[in-house]
Image 1 (cartoon, rainbow, N blue to C red):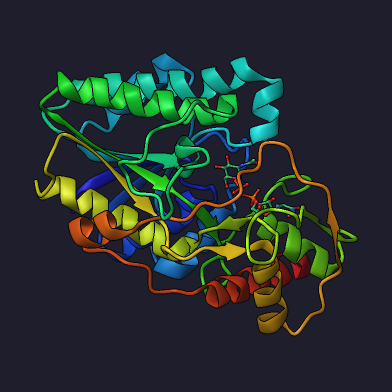
Image 2: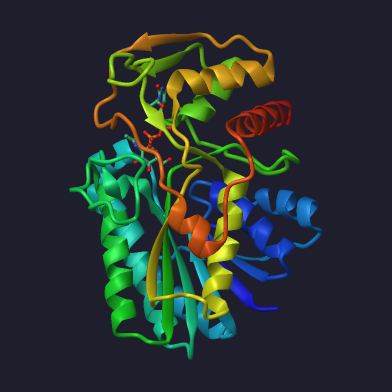
Length: 340
Ligand code: UD1
């Protein structure tokens, strides 16, 4: 079976994708620098799939090491590139760190892929490229807006680099997957989201509050022009998201792509407000969540959810799990982590 490189394969979305790739029979090699993950994740992947992926601890900014990695693994057929820094606030403080981490590493990998007779490349992009879209739900044709942060900009620039490279490299085929809000964890609770420090994202903040690590969830604003006044997002279960990567990879490896470079939105198509997420959590966990409404968070958009038509029709993929499933699995994972 084909050998696939997963960069950032020990991270949140990466580890769930490795599980789905191995379930499909792919041979997986992981590169991860462990800057925001742990080698223990390999045990979780092995426990779920019965197979241990090859793992190389490597910093992708180290170009000679990247070259020797590809020289050693010259039978790689595809790359799913997750490895990147992703904290929006930190990117504002440390723009060069973000441009170096997210852009130079992408360039080094693409340079190696150009040397191969053929290669499939899947890029982790984000719905952040649309900013506050004028029309909802958001289609892939919605204009890319001026990025709000260096992090968001690295996703926009990353997409342009890939698109430009594909134009002049017939041997390279690529898909950028624009994720909406990935949440939840594998139902086994053997892998999941492990934010370092205070979580910036809503769902880990909710589960950490419920388990007692955080005192209270701050809901950022209830005066938005939405039905309950809180912001609306498209929360997609990470297992559905992981499966979409396998489908996208198969599309490229089986030459079913319609262009050398394609983009797809990955979401459920359904928007949920912050308070609806809190309610879903309370329902499935039976816990009462301590939260209070505070002021708006700077840079937040009002509402974003995906038009999934292109992904549904072209990829033949759709989400199967619900927000309740996601909250149930996130809670199971949080309880398991704290017990451990
Ligand atoms: C955030 C990033 C986005 C990135 C994505 C990756 C910002 C402004 N945006 O998206 O660029 O691609 O994460 O996962 O950081 N909320 C609260 N209280 C909290 C945390 C969040 O009320 O403690 C609310 C937010 O205001 C928002 C919703 O929950 O309405 C989701 O927030 P979050 O999980 O941070 O995701 P995004 O802001 O959509």
